[in-house]
Image 1 (cartoon, helix red, strand yellow):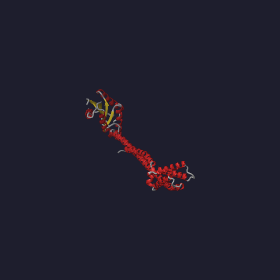
Image 2 (cartoon, helix red, strand yellow):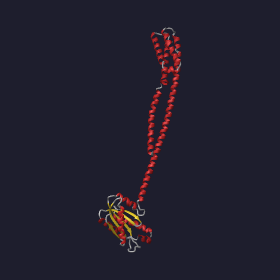
Image 3 (cartoon, helix red, strand yellow):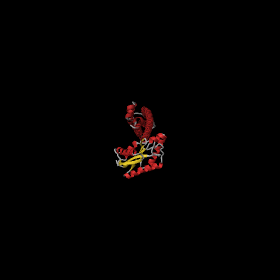
Image 4 (spheres, one colour):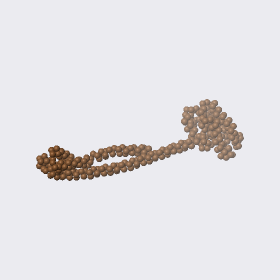
Length: 358
């Protein structure tokens, strides 16, 4: 599990919370407004009470004409219908009594068996019942509103804080991912620097044995020349002038070889005073030209060597070979060039030789 995946999972969790919030609000509101018993029940009781009070006004009028009698009966029927519901029957014991009162009163009015004033008085019981229902339904409605409000507030707090925590965690995970990425990049850079340093001679700045082997492998199949260069009597040079001067001579020789052999040549210090150069080369004549150019450039440079037994300037022993690059050809080519170099030293140094292609 990486920091990046944790960060992406955190932001995905945040999206889930947002979607959940959207899907939670609508059902809660729908459930709130669908509570018939606590919300619409109060309205039915109110309308039923209004019809009964209107019927009372008809009964208490000085004279009750035929159209008023019809209106009276209609209001009683409407009031009866609005109170005759399951919600009231289940929750309020006065409902059935009120319904019985309205039924009997309607029958007696049809039979003219009750005085209007007495009938109006009998409606006080159902009106009181409906008033009680209204008040209780108002309380239930207030409780429902408060519960919905509290649930909504609590839910919003949970969603807000959880979203904030998830968002902060996402940012933290993303920061850790960036930090890990920077560390990886830094480690890669350090590894590349280390590899470059591992392939480089610290004194002269050119390649070493490892770099020589790697370059040969990377140029597999190409026609190349390997030139080995030794400084004649370098130990005497160091003993007479000191190692700092010897180091300076090594650096000067590296620059000279680079200048003479050109930008296509790759130079290496194999240890001590032994140098190597790898250059593209298709024929022996070109390799002879390289060796001549190095010797001529060294003579022109005229590096002084006061401890040289045969000369007053620095001289070189050079062995070279032409070969086709490959992983297993370098040892053979190196052996051939080294033999040529040994023959030069055996013949008195300050010369060069090449061998047949390896």
